[in-house]
Image 1 (cartoon, rainbow, N blue to C red):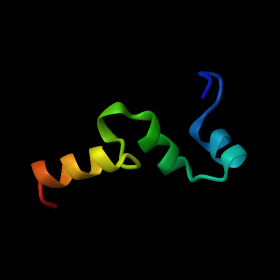
Image 2: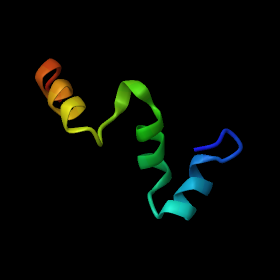
Image 3: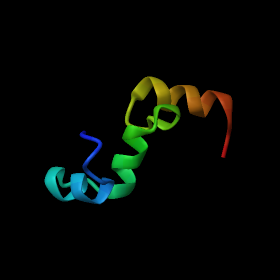
Length: 46
């Protein structure tokens, strides 16, 4: 993603929601990564 594009604009292009884009672009919250998901579940239980 380019800096000139907002999450909403990227969402319109890719078909993903702005929230999903934000999660993807946030290094500490890569919920789309299986490894990250496993780590987050192992560290903290919501």
